[in-house]
Image 1 (cartoon, each protein chain N blue to C red):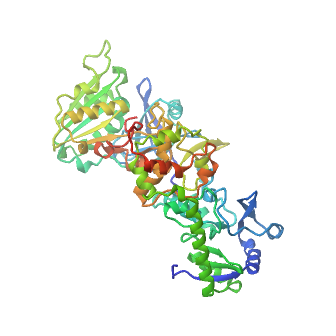
Image 2: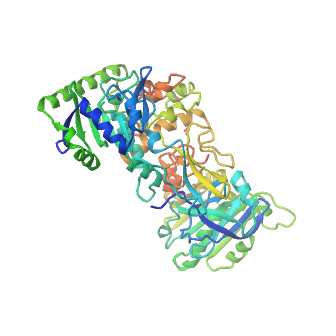
Length: 270
Length: 359
């Protein structure tokens, strides 16, 4: 019988420094991890413990899996001190990813904040593989400063695609920045929600709260706002209790939820 | 009385002789009295069986719940990355637990659902469960804290046992509750006799007596609506704040509760291999739901305290159809602040929420 707590070996092929405290780890799991955009994996810092991350690579990529990790606590600090060729553990994929069939034929608005762009990148790459199904993809991305933007090169490349619009902003500019300055909510004014638009949001909880309110203001319905929630997780399979949000286990019923599903639950953006 | 279960009779003497046979194959866990309370004692050899008093078959439930037979406070659940490091083989001899009560078996339903759910079944729990023979018995007495009747249950088992013993003056009625139970009884058939209708009548009378006793104990706590309705309807009530202020977060209730199953996984390195452990955890801890970035959805004690009850009676029931509580009363018995769940629910049912805690 399979042991759900047993991690698979995942050697690190490469480490890309995105920002001073964010690194993308390119892994080659010994066993392929076939995930859908929005699902997550549990990464093991060997001998220490695990933390959940949503892969940022394309689900179509079979050999490699990328996770973008911000250094915040114990496990992430240990991961940030590793080098290529070292081996970490991986378990998953878990949870429910983005329900693509609900996006077909619709304009997809994607709003990211900081390292929250990581799961959204996986979604974008998935959409690009079947771009004919989506009339337009609009990415609105904000970070604290130009140094904190992730996937800087990809952002340029994506904006060159047909039917893909990319608008970036930073909370605080610097001497090199010539783009928009302001919170990511300030670049959403031109959006209009209707039956043919969906919005996907991921970022720090406080950003998700204000972006959700803004989207509702722009007439997006709560069934059409998709959020990627983060929680303290241990088992990742809906038993240990850490990730409970109201009656849901975020690891099992999420991490992707519509705003309609969660809006009446306690402390959703805490 | 269900009529698809087989029932037999065994005399006390024959049951004592039967243990002498069974101890050769099983590790027996008998209930023994220690200062008026009941604790499990391991009997793993004929010699120890001879030197120990006979088990307590009746009275009431054990102090320590049966949870730790299937889900240890700390257990190795994996190892990486070699195949040898990941092996799990925790049971050398099958076990037989004697004296489980109705509330233990009700609680087992909750644990079985969580740990044996398809697609994410836990190998370790399966091993322990398959290697344990469950012998339950009717309650003949109750503790001050027992309240199974308030939840609609009764103090005699009707599910999930292999054998159930109903004490009579001359011996026991043994009710078979599983295929495994039937097989074992068949292989020791000579020890058993057919039952007589009088014995069934006695059993029913005894059961009615103990049911009434428990209901009488709880007459001051009786409320007309089910617990889950009251809890679901009063999320905002200030009763949660009042009651949770007494709580000192000692976590005794959670460890002793047979239906609390939250845990955390921890890793450690041992020489050349890494080991993964599963450890009991408690949602009352301040950091239980806190993320590394600092956010905490239940930062206040009242939020955490309320969450546990709402999980047991609202969220769990919503997903699986029953409450994650058996009415065993262990939480009431161990609480140093003397918080009594029956009083909490009663107060909730009487309150009309005016002011509440933040949602």
